[in-house]
Length: 212
Image (cartoon, rainbow, N blue to C red; front, side):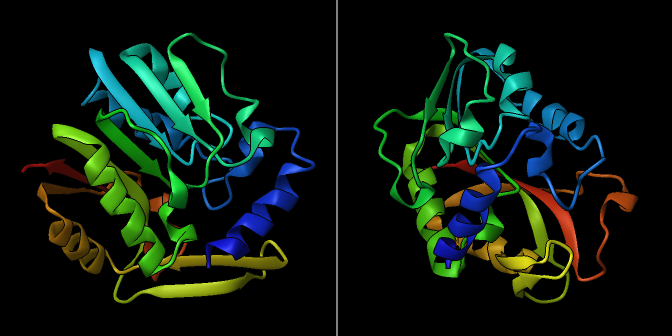
């Protein structure tokens, strides 16, 4: 199903002038400061970060000063051109389903991206993340999750476009992460209540650790 998402963002990338316009459900809200504050809890001048689905760098451009190195993975060059040109930031234009990187990282972040992949696709990515983490490494998965059940949409009336998104139920996603081997799972209600526009989905950050 990720092919539908790719087509949507390919169209968006062709005319994007404002890097902030890549955000939809949190448009006009300063959600990034909450994201940054959470990531900073696990940052360090000796630590490395892998950011999955970096988009236009709204997070990477503000968090890179807290890490030794950041690798930002973003499929579209039209988006990643907005990421700052810093020696400590490496940009790779790759599909998350086919990540090709041999390094291991202290922290992996995936913010607002997981719902563009279905169950099978996202599970493949989470397994890859586990293998890319150093021992005791941290994975932070922030997304909208289904409140009572998984919600899948294939068309957005608001965006007037075909638009694939699957908001998996929170506990379902947690159990899948556990099955891969993630431990010490913490669920954080990351944003103020009013940032959650819909009754059937809610923003959470799942923080979990790799333990062999």
